[in-house]
Every structure is written in C-alpha cells, then in structure tokens.
Length: 258
Image (cartoon, rainbow, N blue to C red; front, top):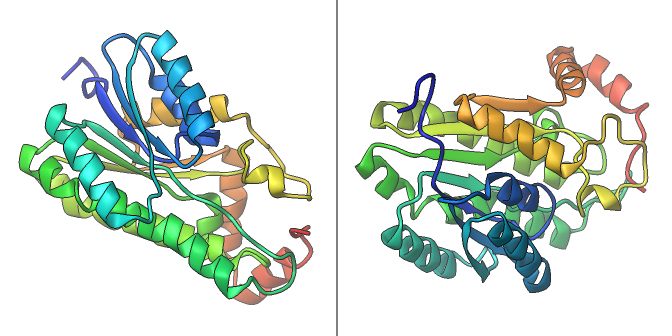
C-alpha cells in the first residue's frame, strides 16, 4: 500500500481498447513498469493504440478478440493472468444501437446485449476466482448514465447498461470481504465511435482523454461509482427519482436518435 491508498496498478486488462474510452484509458495508464493487455475488434486501431502505449514506456500485449466468444476470452485472459497476474481489470467493451423513435430490430437487441452484457460476463467470469484466491485486485465495469433510466430509441443500450450497473454494484458487495475492489463507471456523452452515430445535441460532450483521466483518478481512490460529468449525473438522478409519469413527460420532450 502507498500512503493514502492502494498501490497503482502494474498489470491491466482493458477490453474494447481499440477506440474511445478504452483506447484513452490504455494511453492514460501507459508508463514504464506497467503491463497492458488490450483487446479489441479493430486490428489497425488496436495496433495504433499499442504503438502509443509502447512509446510511453509500457509493455503492451494485444489480441484481436470478440468479447462474445466465451472460450477465446477465457483462454486469452487466463493465459495472460498466469504469466503476469492482473491487478486491474476494466470490462469496457460495448456498443450502442437504436432506430430513433421506433423499435430497435431484434438483431440490434441481441447484438447490444451480447456485447454489453455477455461480453462483461465473459471478461470477468474466468478471472474472478483468481482475483478472490489472491484476495486482491480491482475490477471496473463500464456502465453508463443511460443505465439509470430507459430512454426512447435506446432500449437495448439502456437495459444493457442498467444490467452492468447492477451487476457491478452487487459484485462490489460480494467481493469486498474477499479483498477485491469493484467500481462501476457511469459516463455521460464521451467522444467515441458510439457518440459519433448520434445526430442530436449531446450536452457536456467530453473528449475521451479527459474521461479517462477522471476514471483513472476515481479508480485510484477506490470510488464505488464513477458518474460524470456531474451536471448530467445530477440531472439523471433527479429524473430517475421523479414519479414515472412526470419523468416520461420530461423525457418525451428530449431530442432522440435519428
């Protein structure tokens, strides 16, 4: 332990590291003495992130991997953990889909659920027994402020992030007596390929590197929930606390995906 908190992580797993918050987190943690294990689906982007992290002095290992492939995920993360044990695992991989005010297709519903929910399970399930056996380590799951309340045109995304949020909260209570820390990350709008699809105003849109620094600082402080930016977090908490009819009327006035 260092004075005032845990030892900074020296070996990290970050899924969905080829772009957006995942890439920015990899670059934020990259430093001499740090080992980064990065997964993503875009080989070119992942190689670019690895190059930047290596230039910053980190030891970087990457693999092009789909988090929905349970067998491949388990084999990869367990091999990596056996070589150099993880002390921070960030289950970041995720996607969004939506069809504006209309219904999302069944294919969209299944794809978003598979990546955001099943992908989180596939990332953590193989590693949790090892972390608890060592009685140390930190797990972070990427939820969203959208997980606090269902929004029109984004049923799959909101539902999947609500699941991730609740799962992370339950894990934190479950694993705390076993020496493993858990944090739930709930960002608002962050510049990424996901938000690039949006054709409506996105208040407090934040660059990914700024979001990564907020997350890194909060993880170092072992924050249970990392919700930002604070004006949006406060607004979504208020909306979630309103009677359902009031919240519905308010949300129906907001811009939707097109």
